Amino acid sequence: MTENAFAQSLGIKYPVIMAPMFLVSNAKMIIAALESGISAAVPALNYRSDEEFRKAIQEIRSKTSQPFGVNLIVNKSNFKLDTQLKTCLEMKVAFIITSLGSPEEVIKKCKPQGIKVYCDVVDLKYAQKVEALGADGLIAVNSNAGGHCGPMKPEELIPLLKKNCKIPVISAGGVATHEEYKKALALGADGLSIGTVFIASDESPVSADYKNALIQFGAKDIVLTDKLSGSHLTVINTPYVQGLGTKVNWLEKMLKKNKWLKKYVKLFVALRGMKAIEKAAFGATYQTVWCAGPSIEHIHSIRPVKDIVKDLVGE
Image 1 (cartoon, helix red, strand yellow):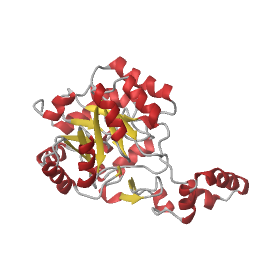
Image 2 (image 1 turned 90 degrees about the vertical axis):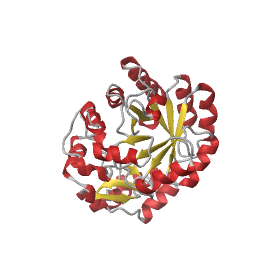
Image 3 (image 1 turned 90 degrees about the horizontal axis):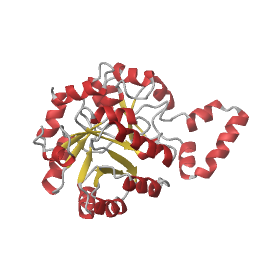
């Protein structure tokens, strides 16, 4: 796999990025991934302050010289974007993965510094837009991805992008075994972005309940919900999720549209002790609703990151 062009462009052994996972990815996971011959990215939003973000980058750098990246949310919802991008530029991370918005400003500022920019895409139209802006690669998010997923199967999306775009296509979604790894590359993917299987690792900071759910549930238990972010997310259909439901109700819609109201509704709930409203409006959080893709079908134990990588690449 050292002859893979995408792997060579990043200076890694295998053409794999450990996907950036909101509230999951941490320095410990990144370091383990880099030491296993793959790359990895961490969401900047996993850190409350710029100081914590910088410390995490420094911690990774103190353990390994291998290349890693940062995931930036580039739409208006991320009011920390300017500060996060400045930190990435100053600390010269190897690459940035952009999500949920236009990457134009990020590409413009990263190009002069030699920082690669890969962009999340779910269809050809957006892929061609970011390619025209100067993106270095496409993170092709397919319908098998955990968390935010796309509408197309990898069998459709990868060949479509490869046929019509000239930059590398990194397939995101539906890989937890060596067979799936080989299949995605055979479809034409230049590299892979893999997330769900790494949540069930020793280094992952999530709760034991979350990790055990990845083992106990299967592909048939993955459902779409819009309760967490307003956009479709794939999550495990636990009894808790079944109780909450997967559709946004009128109260949640109102609160998502008007953030100002949120604190007053919280105060009202606290004063009145209205548990039904509290659960309906605030029950779905990333701590109680667990993101995962259908690849959990192949997760049977909690293992070190290095062992997961060995199985994926067939060593």
